[in-house]
Amino acid sequence: MTPQKIANRPKSRRHLWYERVMALLALANLGLVAFDLSYVPLRDFYLREFRSLTQVYDPIKAIEPHRETQRYLETVENLKVELQKPTGLQSPRVETLLQELRDRSVEMIETNPFQEANKTGTLEKIKNRMRRRIGNDSAKQSFITFWSLPYLSQNWEKWEKEIAFYNQEIQPLIATNYFRQIGETGYFDDHFWLIDIWFIIPFAIEFLARTYYIHRTRIGLTWIEAMLWRWYDIFMLLPFWRLLRIITVALRLHQAKLLNLEPVRLQVNRGLAANFAEELAEVIVIRVINQTQSSIRRGELRRLIANKEARPYIDINNVNEVEAIANLLMKITVYQVLPKIQPDLEAILKHNIDKILQSSPAYRGLQQVPGLGTIPAQITENLVREISQAAYQTLTSSLEDDPVGAELSRQLMEHFTQALGSEVQRQQTIQKIQSLLIDMLEEIKLNYVQNLSEGDLEQVLEEKRAISQIVKR
Image (cartoon, helix red, strand yellow):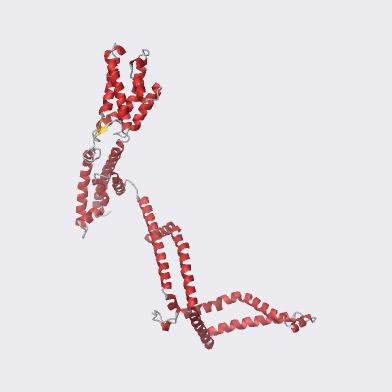
């Protein structure tokens, strides 16, 4: 290991540890943000299982006991104290407290103090439980009966059972109600920023330091461009939209090698590339088809098939492509195609010669002569074979060693092209061809362009990735 590598190794390790510390700090902040956002919806659970936590965190969310429900709970506690005295239900203060509880129960049902905390459902639970306990469909009458001296004094154990029912079924629900101040902004007061600021400050300092370093080391970058170099860190500085910090946390954990996001990045890139390629392919193909249709409508097809000398034409290779293609097709036909279909041509030729000869009385009479019946068939086969071979040799010789034949073939293709072009340029013919071509292009656009979007672009991207890996190796 070189001295330079040894010198750089501790530095890189320190840098990695710093990234990990900041990533874990960001993760802790995100966890705190998630807890803060879930605190109000889950406050009933925290109140039941972690009451000390609610005592600490309620002030952060500006949550305080609701005056009406709190007085209700305090009145019941005062009643419990009186019932524990030796006088019990005979205490003169018991009747006063029961009357107060009856009045407060009716007021609670009528004014619904749970509505401000969006806990009307809790009040409905309280009313339903009290209805079932008393056996009365009216919630008000049920509370009035429950907090009455005759009901509680039916026997010496009655009041203890009813107070136990209240402690288990009613009191925990009433205790969940709370009051929350609304600020001048029209939203509930929230002092979470007092905690969040201790995370924002170090990330703000780090962001400014990174921006300064990037601005100094990256020539030509402005301060704004340097800030955007690590745009995802900005989410850690915003006092709103705090859940967006999950982007910062995920990227920081990836950079600190505590979380591997490479598969996610590759999949996102492939998805974006697939969508972009799909849209781009459709746009390009549709654009080409539309331009072709417009060219046909403007009559460029007529000018295309017209004589070259009749219009300006740019020739890039001094070659008549039409004649060259015709000669190439002629050679392929003569040397490759005709030998393969020669038996079929001979069969057709023999069939037509036989058909002609069968119409001759002399030929039919010759077939009736004993010993000579097979001669006409042999003559026909020899004649067909000679004709096909002679025709094939004539074609090959005209292409190889017969300049006159080659010139005649060239003239034939030239005259054929001119004759075809002149015939196609007739008004009725060209209009029909244009109409058919436009319709054909429209059908291609409707039937095949959609297949571009349904094609397996994932396979194309996979092939591209494989090629890139091969090139790197």
